[in-house]
Amino acid sequence: GDPVFFMTEPGWFKSIYVWSGVWQSMGWSSIIYLAALAGIDPQLHEAAKVDGATRLQRIWHVNIPGIMPTIVILLILNSGSLMAVGFEKVFLMQNDLNMEASDVIATYVYRAGILGAQYSFAAAVGLFNSIINFILLVLVNSAARRLNETSLW
Image 1 (cartoon, one colour):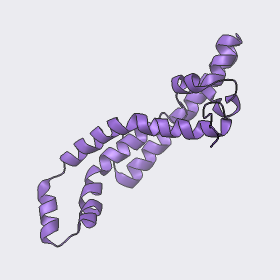
Image 2 (spheres, rainbow, N blue to C red):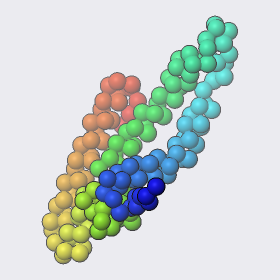
Image 3 (cartoon, one colour):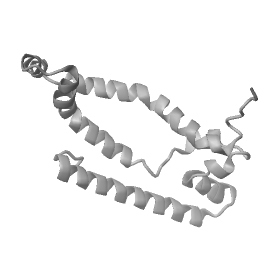
């Protein structure tokens, strides 16, 4: 077949970015969730087995409620960085051929502020980005507190 130049085609940038992010965070997330699973009392699993629960039922009724506070806290922390897509990875993957798909707020601020010497405009865009990010963090935290009684504050 014909070779596919993934880094030069704009249509592939988002897929590469998402899958590399999944690959990048999979190890740390596994450690966090395994630690949360290790904190679940084994007697709950034994009681569920005695009651005749299948493996799927034990996962659904013992494991997931046991790690739900960890899931909620990680959701809140990840929502706090939703607007900060990650300047470094995008900037390193970006080139002139995939610029239309790879331009995010952080790279736009860099080009406008540092390369274009529009410091006040770049500061205003960065501040707007931070304010939106803070509002998202507060909204997700309050929703988590109302729904699950677990929150950062």
